[in-house]
Image 1 (cartoon, rainbow, N blue to C red):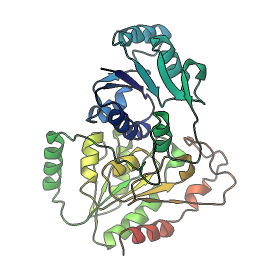
Image 2 (image 1 turned 60 degrees about the vertical axis):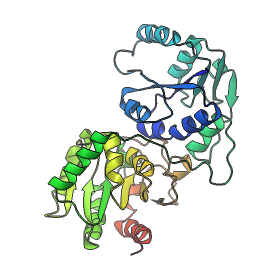
Image 3 (image 1 turned 90 degrees about the vertical axis):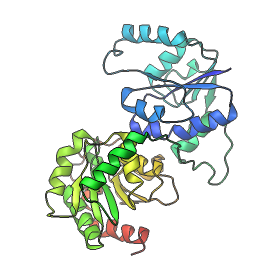
Image 4 (image 1 turned 135 degrees about the vertical axis):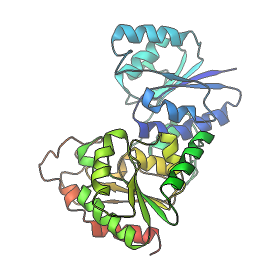
Length: 339
């Protein structure tokens, strides 16, 4: 039996977009055992995939931070005797881990740090979706839209029960829309007052609105919800990733920044409207299910200002967000809900 290690220690969104690759890798090697090296924040995602054997957690910000801690960690992984390594992640740390594991068959992208560590290098294509790039990594032939693979996730029964209790205790009935106003990066966040305008429209169309986000986004969500007397509640910090996916399955639409919740909506296979402020969809990280779309302000010389965004606008005016008025976002929503 072949033993395969997939190395993906990037952000939550990147982890979600690695799942289709793992699914097709299992199709190509049905008798193989596929393990994933991931960070603690994404372990839940990979553990829920029916195509993943074990998830090995690397705490690169904590107990595996130093070089010597990492070296001891790699020595333990080496005992698993992997035959193949595939690495969608392109960082220096990842390449060092691959090198130290000493596996003969290794595959990475040609723009990886220390790219010569990999026996097989795959062209990292710009202008295509990240899922397509990852499928290229395993030499999976796709045509037309066959790359649009919705990740399979095993949602625990306890998560479904928790959601049922949440809906019952908050008397949630009828049409439900989700809004994700947060992001790690300030320049990816659509202005809160603009989100309020979007929510007013949804309320006028008889939707109940639930704000979603992490514990760090709890204050943001509560401030927005506090502007409304009825019909808006927040679940920020209440649910895990898988619980959030299960929640989104019960909504009719998600409006999100270019951030992890947009990928959760794709996993739930619901319509997702992604709002791009400082980033652009051409980077290849947009929700790829056919029900989804995006809005992005064109014609700005300063946009995009970076692939991940910034903590403050480099040119001090945040035109990419402030000039993208709620009316335009609402017009997209109206198209999506056939209003």
